[in-house]
Amino acid sequence: MIQMIQLGNFLLMDRDEFREWLSKQVVSRNIDRLQVHHTASPNYKTRRMVNGTAQQDHFECLEGMRRYHLSEGWSGTGQNITIFEDGKVAISLDRNLDKTPAGIRNANSGAICIEIIGYFDKGNDIMTDKQKRAIVHVYACLVEKFNLSIDTNHIVYHAWFTYGGTRLNDYTPGESSKTCPGTAFWGDGNTIAAAKKNFLPQIQEELNRLKGQNNISEEDQPMTKEEKADFQALQEQIKQLTSKLSMDKIPDWAIEACVAAKNAGAVDTTSGGSYDFYRLITVMYRKGFFK
Ligand SMILES: [Zn+2]
Image 1 (tube, rainbow, N blue to C red):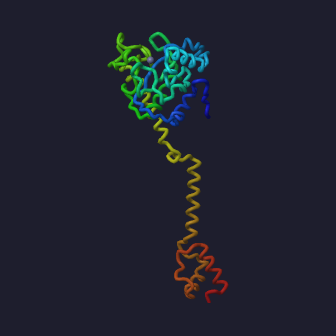
Image 2: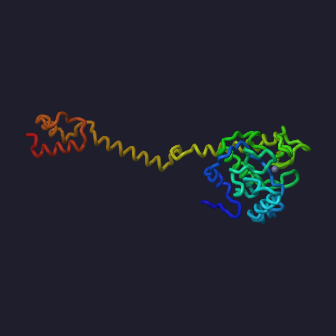
Image 3: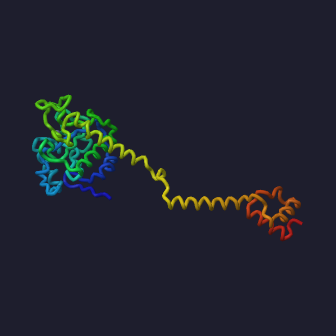
């Protein structure tokens, strides 16, 4: 069921709608990197979370970000994709996948910018499970679509770049332009080691799951109990039909007719005939055809 909503400058969908939507997108620019960002603001506080549910409307949040980006002189919303605390995924219509994002200064070419709603520096927002599941799913789908390797060259944290866009060996306080996606991102932090610990393996796991879904087609499914019973009944019917078509031996009631037909030169052979063949021969014999 399609539940995605298009409103203003964004398309909002459930996590499970993303893969199919993505499969239909035609992207002509070369994609070789997926950026990882947290929004810092908006965050769980500005979303007015009450018992895990945000009181602020998704589109209000999205349009707010867009207005801010435009006020900075950008041509549109900075990111291509936004992932919410409830697992909803938003696509920026003014920054479709074919448009280079404004995510990491001087390091946006060939990249898709994904913004994760929240502030994940230590002591701030604790990421919800729904958001985590949506994140690994979105990255796995993008990896699948653009045939990328799951490593720290193709899935990159903002914190691994300087303000000028130079790639660093790791998050380096004082040199990194930001802490983004947060010093407590994924519970592990924003370093290379942190990414390799749980985040990247979980994307790989999700990708394996998606590929597994592709491979199990209808035919590969084992038969159910009912299907097995139906199949056995069908085999029995075929066996009976086959035995009627070509009988092992001439039925006793047809022997006399067969001998007569052969003697009369009506047939060359009377063995291995079908049930109907013997009936016909018998009827003809009784009518006096082989005298
Ligand atoms: Zn960032």
